[in-house]
Image 1 (cartoon, each protein chain N blue to C red):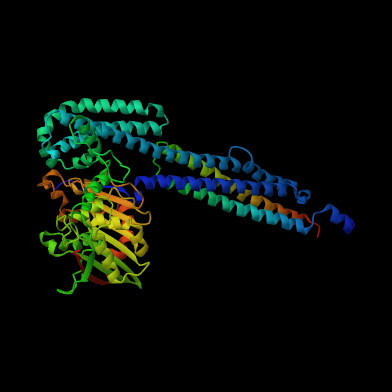
Image 2: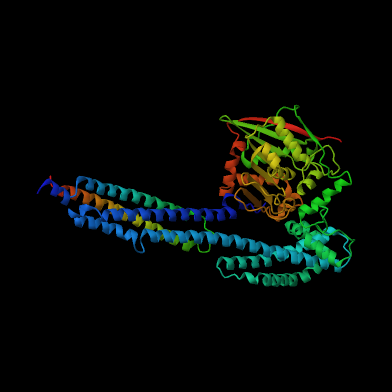
Length: 522
Length: 94
Protein backbone atom coordinates (compact mmCIF):
# COMPACT_ATOMS: atom_id res chain seq x y z
CA UNK A 1 0.00 0.00 0.00
CA UNK A 2 1.35 3.42 -0.89
CA UNK A 3 0.64 6.84 0.48
CA UNK A 4 1.55 6.32 4.09
CA UNK A 5 2.09 10.05 4.56
CA UNK A 6 -0.55 11.64 6.74
CA UNK A 7 -2.10 14.99 5.95
CA UNK A 8 -2.91 16.64 9.26
CA UNK A 9 -5.08 19.72 9.52
CA UNK A 10 -6.59 21.66 12.40
CA UNK A 11 -5.72 21.07 16.03
CA UNK A 12 -3.08 22.84 18.06
CA UNK A 13 -0.92 23.46 14.98
CA UNK A 14 -3.75 24.24 12.56
CA UNK A 15 -4.60 27.39 10.68
CA UNK A 16 -6.98 28.78 13.27
CA UNK A 17 -4.40 28.02 15.94
CA UNK A 18 -1.86 30.03 13.94
CA UNK A 19 -4.22 32.96 13.70
CA UNK A 20 -5.04 32.60 17.38
CA UNK A 21 -1.31 32.57 18.13
CA UNK A 22 -0.82 35.74 16.11
CA UNK A 23 -3.64 37.50 17.95
CA UNK A 24 -2.25 36.29 21.28
CA UNK A 25 1.19 37.58 20.30
CA UNK A 26 -0.35 40.91 19.39
CA UNK A 27 -1.99 41.13 22.81
CA UNK A 28 1.29 40.25 24.50
CA UNK A 29 3.15 42.90 22.54
CA UNK A 30 0.53 45.51 23.40
CA UNK A 31 1.01 44.65 27.09
CA UNK A 32 4.78 44.94 26.73
CA UNK A 33 4.30 48.34 25.09
CA UNK A 34 2.12 49.53 27.97
CA UNK A 35 4.69 48.27 30.49
CA UNK A 36 7.50 50.05 28.66
CA UNK A 37 5.55 53.31 28.66
CA UNK A 38 4.94 52.99 32.42
CA UNK A 39 8.61 52.15 33.04
CA UNK A 40 9.64 55.19 30.99
CA UNK A 41 7.56 57.37 33.32
CA UNK A 42 9.20 55.82 36.38
CA UNK A 43 12.69 56.33 34.91
CA UNK A 44 11.78 59.96 34.16
CA UNK A 45 10.72 60.41 37.78
CA UNK A 46 13.92 58.82 38.98
CA UNK A 47 16.02 61.09 36.72
CA UNK A 48 14.16 64.16 37.98
CA UNK A 49 14.80 63.23 41.60
CA UNK A 50 18.47 62.51 40.90
CA UNK A 51 19.06 65.81 39.15
CA UNK A 52 17.45 67.71 42.04
CA UNK A 53 19.51 65.96 44.70
CA UNK A 54 21.36 68.36 47.00
CA UNK A 55 24.26 65.91 47.06
CA UNK A 56 25.42 67.61 43.87
CA UNK A 57 27.20 70.05 46.14
CA UNK A 58 29.67 67.38 47.26
CA UNK A 59 30.02 65.36 44.01
CA UNK A 60 28.75 67.25 40.97
CA UNK A 61 30.74 65.16 38.51
CA UNK A 62 29.51 61.84 39.92
CA UNK A 63 25.86 62.95 39.78
CA UNK A 64 26.34 64.27 36.24
CA UNK A 65 27.65 60.82 35.21
CA UNK A 66 24.52 59.18 36.62
CA UNK A 67 22.29 61.69 34.80
CA UNK A 68 24.29 61.02 31.65
CA UNK A 69 23.36 57.35 31.90
CA UNK A 70 19.66 58.12 32.42
CA UNK A 71 19.15 60.74 29.71
CA UNK A 72 19.41 58.42 26.63
CA UNK A 73 16.75 56.22 28.19
CA UNK A 74 14.28 59.09 28.02
CA UNK A 75 15.14 60.93 24.80
CA UNK A 76 16.17 59.76 21.35
CA UNK A 77 15.75 56.74 19.08
CA UNK A 78 17.04 54.23 21.67
CA UNK A 79 14.88 55.61 24.47
CA UNK A 80 12.15 53.79 26.32
CA UNK A 81 9.30 55.91 24.87
CA UNK A 82 10.63 55.10 21.41
CA UNK A 83 10.76 51.36 22.21
CA UNK A 84 7.22 51.51 23.63
CA UNK A 85 5.98 53.12 20.41
CA UNK A 86 7.78 50.57 18.23
CA UNK A 87 6.32 47.65 20.18
CA UNK A 88 2.84 49.22 19.98
CA UNK A 89 3.19 49.53 16.20
CA UNK A 90 4.40 45.95 16.01
CA UNK A 91 1.39 44.76 18.01
CA UNK A 92 -0.93 46.59 15.65
CA UNK A 93 0.87 45.19 12.61
CA UNK A 94 0.60 41.61 13.82
CA UNK A 95 -3.09 42.03 14.59
CA UNK A 96 -3.75 43.54 11.16
CA UNK A 97 -1.86 40.71 9.46
CA UNK A 98 -3.90 38.10 11.32
CA UNK A 99 -7.13 39.81 10.28
CA UNK A 100 -5.98 40.05 6.69
CA UNK A 101 -5.23 36.36 6.66
CA UNK A 102 -8.63 35.53 8.06
CA UNK A 103 -10.27 37.70 5.38
CA UNK A 104 -8.12 36.16 2.68
CA UNK A 105 -9.14 32.67 3.75
CA UNK A 106 -12.79 33.72 3.58
CA UNK A 107 -12.31 35.22 0.13
CA UNK A 108 -10.53 32.10 -1.08
CA UNK A 109 -13.30 29.88 0.25
CA UNK A 110 -15.90 32.06 -1.46
CA UNK A 111 -14.04 31.78 -4.75
CA UNK A 112 -13.89 28.00 -4.56
CA UNK A 113 -17.54 27.74 -3.55
CA UNK A 114 -18.66 30.00 -6.39
CA UNK A 115 -16.65 28.02 -8.92
CA UNK A 116 -18.22 24.79 -7.75
CA UNK A 117 -21.65 26.34 -8.08
CA UNK A 118 -20.97 27.53 -11.66
CA UNK A 119 -19.71 24.15 -12.73
CA UNK A 120 -22.45 22.12 -11.13
CA UNK A 121 -25.19 24.36 -12.46
CA UNK A 122 -23.83 24.09 -15.97
CA UNK A 123 -23.44 20.35 -15.57
CA UNK A 124 -27.05 20.03 -14.52
CA UNK A 125 -28.15 21.98 -17.57
CA UNK A 126 -25.89 19.93 -19.84
CA UNK A 127 -27.24 16.65 -18.51
CA UNK A 128 -30.84 17.85 -18.85
CA UNK A 129 -30.41 18.89 -22.48
CA UNK A 130 -28.30 15.95 -23.60
CA UNK A 131 -30.99 13.34 -23.13
CA UNK A 132 -33.23 11.69 -20.59
CA UNK A 133 -31.77 11.32 -17.14
CA UNK A 134 -32.17 7.64 -16.59
CA UNK A 135 -29.57 7.08 -13.92
CA UNK A 136 -29.53 9.78 -11.33
CA UNK A 137 -26.25 8.54 -9.93
CA UNK A 138 -24.52 8.92 -13.28
CA UNK A 139 -25.88 12.43 -13.71
CA UNK A 140 -24.73 13.43 -10.27
CA UNK A 141 -21.36 11.87 -11.00
CA UNK A 142 -20.98 14.18 -13.98
CA UNK A 143 -21.52 17.16 -11.71
CA UNK A 144 -19.09 15.81 -9.20
CA UNK A 145 -16.56 15.00 -11.86
CA UNK A 146 -16.87 18.41 -13.50
CA UNK A 147 -16.52 20.17 -10.18
CA UNK A 148 -13.51 18.02 -9.46
CA UNK A 149 -11.92 19.00 -12.77
CA UNK A 150 -12.69 22.64 -12.09
CA UNK A 151 -11.23 22.63 -8.61
CA UNK A 152 -7.62 23.35 -9.71
CA UNK A 153 -8.78 26.45 -11.60
CA UNK A 154 -10.70 27.67 -8.58
CA UNK A 155 -7.85 26.91 -6.24
CA UNK A 156 -5.36 28.75 -8.46
CA UNK A 157 -7.61 31.77 -8.37
CA UNK A 158 -8.04 31.45 -4.62
CA UNK A 159 -4.29 31.27 -4.15
CA UNK A 160 -3.77 34.41 -6.23
CA UNK A 161 -6.43 36.18 -4.20
CA UNK A 162 -4.77 35.10 -0.97
CA UNK A 163 -1.37 36.40 -2.05
CA UNK A 164 -2.77 39.73 -3.20
CA UNK A 165 -4.74 40.26 0.00
CA UNK A 166 -1.73 39.42 2.13
CA UNK A 167 0.43 41.82 0.13
CA UNK A 168 -2.19 44.56 0.33
CA UNK A 169 -2.67 44.66 -3.47
CA UNK A 170 -6.11 43.12 -3.71
CA UNK A 171 -8.97 45.33 -4.87
CA UNK A 172 -12.12 44.08 -3.24
CA UNK A 173 -14.23 45.85 -5.87
CA UNK A 174 -12.84 43.47 -8.47
CA UNK A 175 -14.06 40.32 -6.69
CA UNK A 176 -17.34 39.93 -8.61
CA UNK A 177 -15.69 40.43 -12.00
CA UNK A 178 -12.97 37.95 -11.17
CA UNK A 179 -15.48 35.34 -10.11
CA UNK A 180 -17.35 35.86 -13.40
CA UNK A 181 -14.09 35.32 -15.30
CA UNK A 182 -13.42 32.23 -13.26
CA UNK A 183 -16.87 30.83 -14.09
CA UNK A 184 -16.25 31.42 -17.81
CA UNK A 185 -12.90 29.65 -17.65
CA UNK A 186 -14.44 26.71 -15.86
CA UNK A 187 -17.29 26.46 -18.36
CA UNK A 188 -14.88 26.52 -21.27
CA UNK A 189 -12.93 23.66 -19.78
CA UNK A 190 -15.91 21.48 -18.99
CA UNK A 191 -17.90 22.01 -22.20
CA UNK A 192 -16.21 19.12 -23.98
CA UNK A 193 -15.59 17.10 -20.85
CA UNK A 194 -19.25 16.68 -19.93
CA UNK A 195 -20.34 15.30 -23.29
CA UNK A 196 -17.39 12.98 -23.53
CA UNK A 197 -17.73 11.51 -20.12
CA UNK A 198 -21.40 11.27 -19.25
CA UNK A 199 -21.64 7.64 -20.33
CA UNK A 200 -18.63 6.75 -18.23
CA UNK A 201 -19.45 8.91 -15.28
CA UNK A 202 -20.63 6.11 -13.06
CA UNK A 203 -17.52 4.06 -13.71
CA UNK A 204 -15.37 7.09 -13.17
CA UNK A 205 -17.00 7.81 -9.82
CA UNK A 206 -16.22 4.30 -8.59
CA UNK A 207 -12.61 4.78 -9.58
CA UNK A 208 -12.41 8.28 -8.14
CA UNK A 209 -14.35 8.30 -4.89
CA UNK A 210 -12.58 11.48 -3.88
CA UNK A 211 -15.03 13.25 -6.18
CA UNK A 212 -17.86 12.31 -3.86
CA UNK A 213 -17.10 15.29 -1.68
CA UNK A 214 -17.30 17.60 -4.69
CA UNK A 215 -20.45 15.81 -5.75
CA UNK A 216 -22.20 16.40 -2.47
CA UNK A 217 -21.14 20.03 -2.36
CA UNK A 218 -22.29 20.48 -5.93
CA UNK A 219 -25.66 18.87 -5.26
CA UNK A 220 -27.92 21.91 -4.78
CA UNK A 221 -26.63 23.97 -7.75
CA UNK A 222 -26.63 20.82 -9.88
CA UNK A 223 -30.27 20.25 -9.07
CA UNK A 224 -30.94 23.90 -9.77
CA UNK A 225 -29.36 23.67 -13.22
CA UNK A 226 -31.19 20.45 -13.92
CA UNK A 227 -34.61 21.72 -12.90
CA UNK A 228 -34.28 24.97 -14.83
CA UNK A 229 -33.94 23.15 -18.12
CA UNK A 230 -35.59 19.77 -17.73
CA UNK A 231 -39.23 19.15 -17.06
CA UNK A 232 -39.84 18.47 -13.41
CA UNK A 233 -43.00 18.20 -11.39
CA UNK A 234 -44.04 21.34 -9.57
CA UNK A 235 -42.28 21.40 -6.24
CA UNK A 236 -42.49 23.84 -3.36
CA UNK A 237 -39.93 26.61 -3.23
CA UNK A 238 -36.96 26.14 -0.96
CA UNK A 239 -37.46 27.06 2.66
CA UNK A 240 -41.24 26.97 2.74
CA UNK A 241 -42.97 29.01 5.40
CA UNK A 242 -44.36 25.89 6.99
CA UNK A 243 -40.87 24.85 8.09
CA UNK A 244 -40.62 22.10 5.49
CA UNK A 245 -37.25 21.59 3.88
CA UNK A 246 -38.48 22.76 0.47
CA UNK A 247 -36.99 21.97 -2.90
CA UNK A 248 -34.32 21.87 -4.03
CA UNK A 249 -32.57 21.31 -0.70
CA UNK A 250 -29.82 23.81 -0.12
CA UNK A 251 -27.38 21.59 1.72
CA UNK A 252 -26.81 18.06 2.92
CA UNK A 253 -28.63 18.67 6.17
CA UNK A 254 -31.74 19.88 4.31
CA UNK A 255 -31.47 16.97 1.92
CA UNK A 256 -31.35 14.38 4.68
CA UNK A 257 -33.93 16.39 6.59
CA UNK A 258 -36.27 16.05 3.64
CA UNK A 259 -35.68 12.30 3.58
CA UNK A 260 -36.15 12.00 7.32
CA UNK A 261 -39.42 13.90 7.03
CA UNK A 262 -40.78 10.90 5.19
CA UNK A 263 -41.02 9.34 8.62
CA UNK A 264 -44.03 11.53 9.27
CA UNK A 265 -46.07 9.68 6.66
CA UNK A 266 -44.42 6.27 6.59
CA UNK A 267 -42.89 3.93 9.19
CA UNK A 268 -39.40 4.86 8.09
CA UNK A 269 -36.44 6.68 9.68
CA UNK A 270 -38.02 6.51 13.11
CA UNK A 271 -35.97 6.99 16.26
CA UNK A 272 -38.11 4.94 18.63
CA UNK A 273 -37.29 4.18 22.26
CA UNK A 274 -34.13 2.29 23.18
CA UNK A 275 -33.24 0.24 26.24
CA UNK A 276 -29.90 -1.27 27.20
CA UNK A 277 -29.12 -4.46 29.12
CA UNK A 278 -25.79 -5.37 30.66
CA UNK A 279 -24.14 -8.23 28.79
CA UNK A 280 -23.33 -10.96 31.29
CA UNK A 281 -22.54 -13.99 29.10
CA UNK A 282 -18.99 -14.67 27.96
CA UNK A 283 -17.23 -12.65 30.63
CA UNK A 284 -15.90 -9.12 30.29
CA UNK A 285 -14.34 -8.16 26.96
CA UNK A 286 -10.58 -8.12 26.72
CA UNK A 287 -8.69 -4.85 26.97
CA UNK A 288 -6.29 -4.80 24.00
CA UNK A 289 -2.61 -4.68 24.87
CA UNK A 290 -2.27 -2.11 22.12
CA UNK A 291 -2.92 1.35 23.47
CA UNK A 292 -3.42 4.74 21.87
CA UNK A 293 -5.64 5.30 18.83
CA UNK A 294 -4.82 1.83 17.52
CA UNK A 295 -6.12 0.23 20.70
CA UNK A 296 -9.25 2.37 20.54
CA UNK A 297 -10.10 1.22 17.01
CA UNK A 298 -9.27 -2.39 17.84
CA UNK A 299 -11.89 -2.22 20.58
CA UNK A 300 -14.46 -1.42 17.89
CA UNK A 301 -13.59 -4.42 15.71
CA UNK A 302 -16.06 -6.87 17.39
CA UNK A 303 -18.93 -4.51 16.53
CA UNK A 304 -17.86 -3.86 12.93
CA UNK A 305 -17.55 -7.19 11.13
CA UNK A 306 -20.10 -9.11 9.07
CA UNK A 307 -21.51 -10.68 12.23
CA UNK A 308 -21.82 -7.35 13.99
CA UNK A 309 -25.57 -7.17 13.50
CA UNK A 310 -25.90 -9.61 16.41
CA UNK A 311 -23.74 -7.34 18.60
CA UNK A 312 -25.65 -4.06 18.85
CA UNK A 313 -23.57 -3.13 21.86
CA UNK A 314 -21.98 -0.08 23.41
CA UNK A 315 -18.69 -0.74 25.20
CA UNK A 316 -18.02 1.33 28.31
CA UNK A 317 -14.67 1.35 30.08
CA UNK A 318 -14.03 2.82 33.50
CA UNK A 319 -10.37 3.74 33.89
CA UNK A 320 -9.15 4.51 37.41
CA UNK A 321 -5.73 5.89 38.14
CA UNK A 322 -4.47 7.84 41.15
CA UNK A 323 -7.99 8.29 42.48
CA UNK A 324 -9.26 9.77 39.21
CA UNK A 325 -12.03 8.06 37.24
CA UNK A 326 -12.37 8.50 33.48
CA UNK A 327 -14.90 6.86 31.14
CA UNK A 328 -14.47 5.85 27.53
CA UNK A 329 -17.36 4.81 25.32
CA UNK A 330 -16.98 2.84 22.09
CA UNK A 331 -19.86 3.26 19.65
CA UNK A 332 -20.52 0.76 16.82
CA UNK A 333 -20.80 1.66 13.14
CA UNK A 334 -23.84 0.93 10.98
CA UNK A 335 -24.70 -2.70 11.62
CA UNK A 336 -27.81 -2.98 9.48
CA UNK A 337 -29.17 -0.89 6.64
CA UNK A 338 -32.77 -1.24 7.71
CA UNK A 339 -34.74 2.01 7.74
CA UNK A 340 -37.96 0.66 9.21
CA UNK A 341 -37.28 0.93 12.92
CA UNK A 342 -36.03 -2.60 13.55
CA UNK A 343 -34.59 -3.69 16.90
CA UNK A 344 -30.97 -2.74 16.10
CA UNK A 345 -30.50 1.00 16.80
CA UNK A 346 -27.25 1.17 14.79
CA UNK A 347 -29.14 1.15 11.52
CA UNK A 348 -29.81 3.20 8.41
CA UNK A 349 -32.41 5.31 10.19
CA UNK A 350 -29.78 6.52 12.62
CA UNK A 351 -27.55 7.53 9.68
CA UNK A 352 -30.25 9.60 8.03
CA UNK A 353 -31.42 11.19 11.28
CA UNK A 354 -27.90 12.02 12.44
CA UNK A 355 -27.01 13.61 9.10
CA UNK A 356 -30.19 15.67 9.37
CA UNK A 357 -29.16 16.81 12.85
CA UNK A 358 -31.91 14.91 14.64
CA UNK A 359 -31.79 12.75 17.72
CA UNK A 360 -31.07 9.09 17.09
CA UNK A 361 -31.61 5.66 18.59
CA UNK A 362 -27.83 5.14 18.71
CA UNK A 363 -27.50 8.34 20.74
CA UNK A 364 -30.16 7.04 23.11
CA UNK A 365 -28.20 3.80 23.51
CA UNK A 366 -25.00 5.67 24.46
CA UNK A 367 -26.84 7.90 26.92
CA UNK A 368 -28.54 4.92 28.55
CA UNK A 369 -25.27 2.96 28.78
CA UNK A 370 -23.52 5.85 30.52
CA UNK A 371 -26.39 6.33 32.96
CA UNK A 372 -26.54 2.63 33.79
CA UNK A 373 -22.73 2.56 34.21
CA UNK A 374 -23.04 5.17 36.95
CA UNK A 375 -21.04 7.97 35.38
CA UNK A 376 -21.00 10.90 37.79
CA UNK A 377 -21.21 14.58 36.90
CA UNK A 378 -17.79 16.03 36.22
CA UNK A 379 -16.08 12.72 35.46
CA UNK A 380 -14.34 13.03 32.07
CA UNK A 381 -15.82 11.07 29.18
CA UNK A 382 -14.30 10.13 25.83
CA UNK A 383 -16.58 9.13 22.94
CA UNK A 384 -14.99 6.99 20.23
CA UNK A 385 -16.63 5.61 17.12
CA UNK A 386 -16.05 4.29 13.66
CA UNK A 387 -18.27 5.31 10.73
CA UNK A 388 -21.79 5.88 12.14
CA UNK A 389 -20.26 5.53 15.61
CA UNK A 390 -18.01 8.54 15.02
CA UNK A 391 -20.97 10.50 13.68
CA UNK A 392 -22.92 9.65 16.83
CA UNK A 393 -19.94 10.57 19.01
CA UNK A 394 -19.57 14.02 17.46
CA UNK A 395 -23.31 14.62 17.47
CA UNK A 396 -23.52 13.84 21.19
CA UNK A 397 -20.46 16.00 21.93
CA UNK A 398 -22.37 18.88 20.32
CA UNK A 399 -25.66 18.17 22.12
CA UNK A 400 -26.11 20.68 24.99
CA UNK A 401 -28.42 18.32 26.93
CA UNK A 402 -25.92 15.46 26.71
CA UNK A 403 -23.05 17.74 27.72
CA UNK A 404 -25.03 18.99 30.67
CA UNK A 405 -25.31 15.44 31.92
CA UNK A 406 -21.85 14.15 30.92
CA UNK A 407 -18.48 15.90 30.78
CA UNK A 408 -17.32 15.05 27.28
CA UNK A 409 -13.69 16.13 26.94
CA UNK A 410 -12.43 13.98 24.08
CA UNK A 411 -13.79 12.52 20.84
CA UNK A 412 -12.29 10.09 18.33
CA UNK A 413 -13.99 9.52 14.98
CA UNK A 414 -12.79 7.31 12.13
CA UNK A 415 -14.37 7.28 8.68
CA UNK A 416 -17.27 9.50 9.75
CA UNK A 417 -18.97 12.41 7.94
CA UNK A 418 -18.71 15.03 10.69
CA UNK A 419 -17.77 18.24 8.88
CA UNK A 420 -21.18 19.82 9.39
CA UNK A 421 -20.95 19.98 13.18
CA UNK A 422 -20.07 23.03 15.23
CA UNK A 423 -17.95 21.50 17.97
CA UNK A 424 -17.72 23.08 21.42
CA UNK A 425 -14.30 24.64 22.05
CA UNK A 426 -13.63 22.58 25.16
CA UNK A 427 -13.84 19.20 23.44
CA UNK A 428 -10.67 17.81 21.82
CA UNK A 429 -11.52 15.93 18.63
CA UNK A 430 -9.40 13.69 16.42
CA UNK A 431 -10.94 12.64 13.10
CA UNK A 432 -9.33 10.03 10.84
CA UNK A 433 -10.27 9.99 7.16
CA UNK A 434 -9.03 8.25 4.03
CA UNK A 435 -8.79 10.00 0.69
CA UNK A 436 -10.48 6.96 -0.91
CA UNK A 437 -13.25 6.67 1.69
CA UNK A 438 -16.63 7.82 0.37
CA UNK A 439 -18.28 7.92 3.79
CA UNK A 440 -16.47 10.92 5.38
CA UNK A 441 -17.07 12.77 2.11
CA UNK A 442 -20.84 12.53 2.53
CA UNK A 443 -21.09 15.85 4.28
CA UNK A 444 -20.62 19.44 3.33
CA UNK A 445 -16.86 19.40 2.90
CA UNK A 446 -13.66 19.28 4.87
CA UNK A 447 -13.63 19.34 8.65
CA UNK A 448 -13.14 22.78 10.14
CA UNK A 449 -9.60 23.84 10.95
CA UNK A 450 -9.99 24.54 14.65
CA UNK A 451 -7.56 24.54 17.52
CA UNK A 452 -9.48 21.71 19.22
CA UNK A 453 -10.22 19.69 16.08
CA UNK A 454 -7.46 17.70 14.40
CA UNK A 455 -8.14 15.84 11.18
CA UNK A 456 -5.76 13.21 9.84
CA UNK A 457 -6.27 12.29 6.17
CA UNK A 458 -4.39 9.43 4.59
CA UNK A 459 -4.03 8.52 0.94
CA UNK A 460 -4.30 4.72 0.72
CA UNK A 461 -3.15 4.62 -2.88
CA UNK A 462 -5.34 3.38 -5.74
CA UNK A 463 -4.12 -0.20 -5.55
CA UNK A 464 -5.54 -0.58 -2.06
CA UNK A 465 -9.03 0.24 -3.31
CA UNK A 466 -10.79 -2.83 -4.65
CA UNK A 467 -14.22 -1.24 -4.79
CA UNK A 468 -15.92 2.02 -3.90
CA UNK A 469 -16.14 1.13 -0.21
CA UNK A 470 -12.85 -0.60 0.51
CA UNK A 471 -11.34 2.73 1.55
CA UNK A 472 -13.77 2.61 4.47
CA UNK A 473 -12.52 -0.69 5.91
CA UNK A 474 -11.77 -0.70 9.62
CA UNK A 475 -8.54 -2.67 9.20
CA UNK A 476 -7.23 0.13 6.97
CA UNK A 477 -8.21 2.65 9.64
CA UNK A 478 -6.37 0.58 12.25
CA UNK A 479 -3.27 0.81 10.04
CA UNK A 480 -3.77 4.56 9.84
CA UNK A 481 -4.12 4.65 13.63
CA UNK A 482 -0.73 2.94 13.96
CA UNK A 483 0.82 5.75 11.92
CA UNK A 484 -1.05 8.31 14.01
CA UNK A 485 0.27 6.78 17.22
CA UNK A 486 3.80 7.17 15.92
CA UNK A 487 3.57 10.71 14.62
CA UNK A 488 5.00 13.60 16.63
CA UNK A 489 2.84 16.17 14.89
CA UNK A 490 1.96 18.84 17.48
CA UNK A 491 -1.79 18.77 16.75
CA UNK A 492 -1.96 15.00 17.22
CA UNK A 493 0.28 15.27 20.27
CA UNK A 494 -2.10 17.79 21.84
CA UNK A 495 -5.08 15.49 21.23
CA UNK A 496 -3.11 12.50 22.55
CA UNK A 497 -2.52 14.40 25.78
CA UNK A 498 -6.27 14.96 26.23
CA UNK A 499 -6.89 11.25 25.58
CA UNK A 500 -4.22 10.02 27.99
CA UNK A 501 -6.65 9.42 30.91
CA UNK A 502 -8.71 7.12 28.66
CA UNK A 503 -6.24 5.36 26.40
CA UNK A 504 -3.07 4.98 28.46
CA UNK A 505 -4.53 2.05 30.36
CA UNK A 506 -1.21 0.44 31.39
CA UNK A 507 -1.00 0.50 35.17
CA UNK A 508 -4.56 1.71 35.52
CA UNK A 509 -7.52 -0.18 36.92
CA UNK A 510 -9.83 -0.84 33.97
CA UNK A 511 -13.35 -2.21 34.18
CA UNK A 512 -15.15 -3.04 30.94
CA UNK A 513 -18.89 -3.47 30.51
CA UNK A 514 -20.85 -4.07 27.32
CA UNK A 515 -24.42 -2.85 27.03
CA UNK A 516 -26.75 -4.57 24.59
CA UNK A 517 -29.00 -1.99 22.95
CA UNK A 518 -32.45 -2.68 21.56
CA UNK A 519 -35.07 -0.49 19.96
CA UNK A 520 -38.44 -1.21 21.52
CA UNK A 521 -41.52 -1.95 19.47
CA UNK A 522 -44.12 0.75 19.81
CA UNK B 1 31.87 76.83 60.87
CA UNK B 2 28.92 76.55 63.21
CA UNK B 3 26.75 73.49 63.32
CA UNK B 4 23.75 75.48 61.91
CA UNK B 5 25.77 76.75 58.98
CA UNK B 6 27.09 73.26 58.34
CA UNK B 7 23.55 71.94 58.30
CA UNK B 8 22.52 74.56 55.77
CA UNK B 9 25.35 74.16 53.32
CA UNK B 10 26.16 70.48 53.46
CA UNK B 11 23.65 67.76 52.66
CA UNK B 12 22.88 65.44 55.47
CA UNK B 13 23.10 61.68 55.75
CA UNK B 14 19.40 61.47 54.83
CA UNK B 15 20.15 62.77 51.33
CA UNK B 16 22.82 60.15 50.85
CA UNK B 17 20.30 57.51 51.82
CA UNK B 18 17.93 58.96 49.25
CA UNK B 19 20.55 58.64 46.52
CA UNK B 20 21.19 55.04 47.58
CA UNK B 21 17.44 54.46 47.34
CA UNK B 22 17.46 55.95 43.82
CA UNK B 23 20.27 53.56 42.87
CA UNK B 24 18.23 50.58 44.09
CA UNK B 25 15.19 51.83 42.18
CA UNK B 26 17.28 52.15 39.02
CA UNK B 27 18.48 48.58 39.53
CA UNK B 28 14.89 47.33 40.00
CA UNK B 29 13.71 49.20 36.90
CA UNK B 30 16.55 47.60 34.96
CA UNK B 31 15.30 44.17 36.01
CA UNK B 32 11.75 45.06 34.95
CA UNK B 33 13.02 46.24 31.59
CA UNK B 34 15.01 43.06 31.07
CA UNK B 35 11.79 41.16 31.79
CA UNK B 36 9.94 43.27 29.19
CA UNK B 37 12.63 42.53 26.61
CA UNK B 38 12.39 38.80 27.34
CA UNK B 39 8.60 38.88 26.93
CA UNK B 40 8.92 40.72 23.64
CA UNK B 41 11.48 38.19 22.44
CA UNK B 42 9.25 35.26 23.45
CA UNK B 43 6.66 36.34 20.88
CA UNK B 44 9.24 35.70 18.16
CA UNK B 45 8.55 31.98 18.65
CA UNK B 46 5.01 32.56 17.33
CA UNK B 47 4.34 30.64 14.13
CA UNK B 48 3.82 33.78 12.05
CA UNK B 49 1.78 33.16 8.91
CA UNK B 50 2.30 36.65 7.59
CA UNK B 51 4.28 37.21 4.41
CA UNK B 52 5.98 39.95 6.41
CA UNK B 53 7.13 37.46 9.07
CA UNK B 54 10.81 38.22 8.56
CA UNK B 55 10.11 41.94 8.87
CA UNK B 56 8.20 41.36 12.11
CA UNK B 57 10.96 39.22 13.52
CA UNK B 58 13.67 41.75 12.59
CA UNK B 59 11.72 44.62 14.14
CA UNK B 60 11.04 42.55 17.24
CA UNK B 61 14.71 41.65 17.59
CA UNK B 62 15.79 45.28 17.13
CA UNK B 63 13.23 46.54 19.64
CA UNK B 64 14.17 43.86 22.16
CA UNK B 65 17.82 44.81 21.78
CA UNK B 66 16.91 48.48 22.35
CA UNK B 67 15.00 47.58 25.53
CA UNK B 68 17.87 45.40 26.75
CA UNK B 69 20.21 48.30 26.07
CA UNK B 70 17.95 50.51 28.20
CA UNK B 71 18.11 47.91 30.98
CA UNK B 72 21.90 47.97 30.79
CA UNK B 73 21.79 51.79 30.84
CA UNK B 74 19.76 51.65 34.03
CA UNK B 75 22.28 49.28 35.53
CA UNK B 76 25.03 51.78 34.70
CA UNK B 77 22.94 54.58 36.19
CA UNK B 78 22.42 52.50 39.33
CA UNK B 79 26.17 51.96 39.67
CA UNK B 80 26.85 55.67 39.05
CA UNK B 81 24.28 56.71 41.65
CA UNK B 82 25.69 54.27 44.19
CA UNK B 83 29.19 55.57 43.53
CA UNK B 84 27.93 59.15 43.88
CA UNK B 85 26.32 58.26 47.22
CA UNK B 86 29.58 56.72 48.42
CA UNK B 87 31.62 59.75 47.31
CA UNK B 88 29.16 62.14 48.94
CA UNK B 89 29.35 60.19 52.17
CA UNK B 90 33.14 60.20 52.09
CA UNK B 91 33.20 63.96 51.61
CA UNK B 92 30.80 64.70 54.43
CA UNK B 93 32.56 66.39 57.35
CA UNK B 94 32.96 63.93 60.22
